[in-house]
Length: 362
Image (cartoon, rainbow, N blue to C red):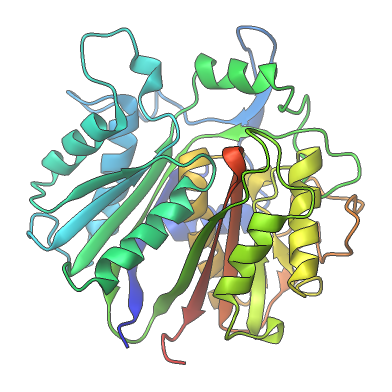
């Protein structure tokens, strides 16, 4: 059976450049969440410093973030991005939307083509924009492309830059917290936004980390509200864990947006799947909601948590505020095992889950 391996990865965020640097920063208690002025009202977010990390000449800020992350992930990977059997998948929800009104093309496919051209890419270039599950959906798509046997490597990059359009949209939905967010906490009242770019390069073979399973399910509950019974999320979990016991999991990397309904829905889905006692890793308090980058960034940090045998605490959590007694901790938690599940949900009833396994051999 063909096994899909993680060959290399990279995170670029307000906490640093490099996956290990970001994990170390979180474990050291560092956070870039700040109160920022908005067009309507102030908002909390973890944003990149555009003066210290400016756009590259000839590229938008969004494109520059992607190029920088991909370039670092490629370094030492042995992967030739210009090979015809290397594919590229770009994940983002809004992409270059802040550039609307300029003379240049700003659609995601145009941005993806420019990013791919920077690396001389000749293989196929795909874009994934599926609400909050985009990053994980892109990884699952990359896995499927490799399983087809038509490609040797797939570069998967997810990125998001915040803009007044995004901020005011979430404010209109009353979804932003007026304080640092509190995933799964009894006093949670909304999410914080974040900026980041994250890249994973996929290949085939044994050893290292394996992207063992992936599933996307849509329960079509509501345009912005999740299913109260976690229907779609539960069915993704049931699929990726059909040959895995909860005892095999070191952790579940949850969506954990700190909105009232998302965290409750996730807890219900986890309970239905028998995962109440598995430690939950919620990272939105550290990075904010990085949207199209979230599924990739959070998967990378979950891999590092398993490798280090300790999981960062869920920043902002104090008292459990969901109906199912899931296992959440504000402090770092020792973890054991060689596998984890990444879970995400998004607008329109979309849900995604993926199973990652260290070692790559069942």
